Length: 223
Image (cartoon, rainbow, N blue to C red; front, side, top):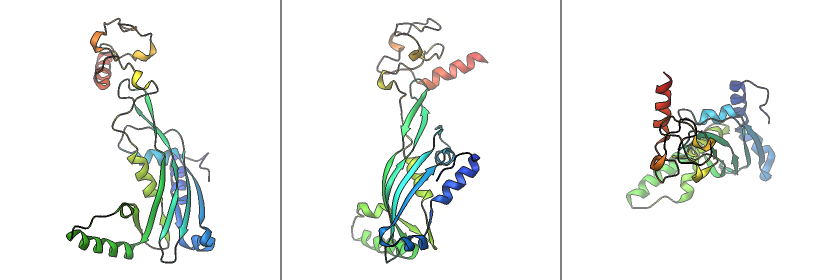
C-alpha cells in the first residue's frame, strides 16, 4: 500500500487503517495466514516520535505475516523498517537512526489477557517470575487487531540517548567560540571561521564541549 501524493494527515490515517486487521479477513486466509506489506508514511513515523527532536523525512515499511489461531490468539511475525534523524551529540548535524526491528508478538482476546494477568499476579506472590513470552503479549478487543500502537512504540523505543553524525567518533563537533561546524574545514589547531585556538577544547579531544552550549552562544551572538 502506497501513501504517496497524500497530505500528511491523510497519509498518517491511511497508514493506521492499513494496520487494522479484521479477524474475518484472517479466517478467510485460513491456516496459511495473511501477508502484510504496509508503507509507513513519514507523518506516521513523525507522530511516533512526537515530543522529541527527531525528524522523519522518509517513509518506513512493515513486512509481516499474521495468523489467527482457533482460540482467538493472533500471532504476528515480521520486520519493521524505519529511519529518522536526530541532532548529532557533537556537531548538531543530522545523525541517522535505524529503527528497524524484528517483530514476534502475540495478541490475546481481552478476557483471556486479563485472566492471565490475574493468574500471574497470584503467581508473583509465590515468587514466580514472568518469562520472555509474557512481555510480548498484547490484548485486543472486538473483531479486529490494531498493529499501529505496537509499531509506534517500537519506533519510539529506537530513539537514542546519544547519536553521532556520519563522521562517527571522528566528528570534531562545534567551535566553542563561534559555533562553526569543525567538520566543514580542514583538521587544524584553530577554527577556520573565527580563527579561535581549539587546543584542548577541540572536538578531537576526549571530552568535546557540549554542542548545545556552542550553538546557544552562536544564537546569542546573532541577536
